[in-house]
Amino acid sequence: MTFVTIATRRYLPMALQLAATIRAADRSAEIWLWLAEPPQACCVVPEGLFDRVLVAEEWIGTAMREFVRSHDELEACCGLKPTVLLTTMDLKREERQFVLIDGDAWVFGPFDEVARALQTSDVVLTPHLLEAEATRAASDDLRKSLRWGVCNLGFIAVRQGARGREVLEWWRERCLDACTVDPASGLFLDQKWMDLALAFDGVAALRHPGYNVNPTNAAARGVSSAGGRLVAGADRLPVRFVHFCGFGRSVRPTTIFDACNEGSPLRRLVEEYDAVLQKMDFAVTRTRPWGYASALNG
Image (cartoon, rainbow, N blue to C red; front, side):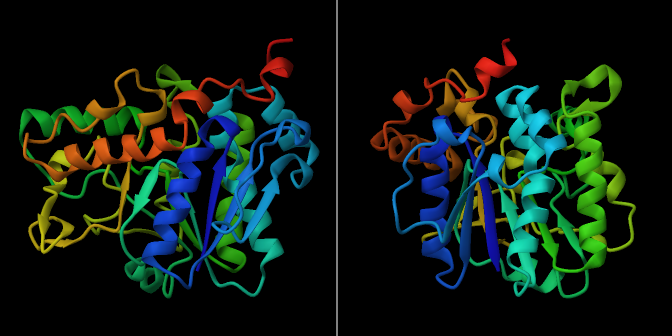
């Protein structure tokens, strides 16, 4: 399985921490980093964590290059996802399974369930919500899903093959057409488009509570500790990865899991995550300008 992530120099510490957790969870995994920065603005990436580091501009086509230069940092990184996945699949044709995962994630175990799902499906997505709940908090989460999308596209797994590529090419065209935050028009970056893809042949939803635990679904997933590891759901299945959505853009990042009860291990985890990033000078790197900002501003 090959893992793929996208980063700018501002958020490189997050990508480094992600890679470290993937290495700890699955030593057989290969990890590729794509930098969404102009070649002249790219930073030095420490050796050892990534199997390959590529500068996106040197590999993407003209249309996507113009897209990146005409959108802000978040829009560009989200819109690059299908193109980066397709290019990685081209460059590594011997690989059968690919996972694109956002840099602001912490992996805790091998993605065995994803590997099994890709035996029978071409694309695997992770829905925010897995159960029908009648609480007011659940109603609020439903409204968020209607606004932001059924699935969190901080994760997508694809099987090498024509059908998976077809879905990614469709997604790429949709992102080129519109990858912005415009709830009134039914748009939320790259994510809302994939609500439609759930109806496509070969696209599956992974209904495992331990994947893509994030602030939107954390309360409903019922995450707890058991035997020194995180578990989720009524069956206490292992948490495979936690996604710290919004951490990098939040004024108070350690509060993103405050919707969980006071004893939730996720509250302690986000504090640990913050401490790890601060050791990598995240407070400094996050203030750096995006390399394409000057092109966007004129």
